[in-house]
Length: 67
Image 1 (cartoon, rainbow, N blue to C red):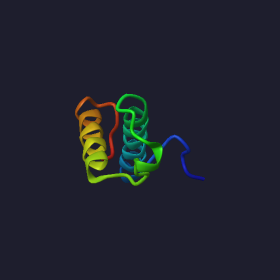
Image 2 (cartoon, rainbow, N blue to C red):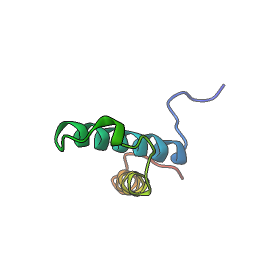
Image 3 (cartoon, rainbow, N blue to C red):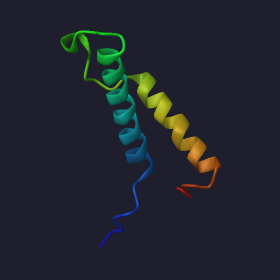
């Protein structure tokens, strides 16, 4: 049985990109008063870049280790 606490690096990046995009959508609707119909639900390259940067920082701090 696999370790349920282990998340592969790519999966962590994907999940963080999704969270990043969800926050962007929330802020766009709430703070910029964008019409929800105009806010894309697709995760962007910018979201992935931000997530990748976050994972690299977690690795540097020794919080995660993907070997």
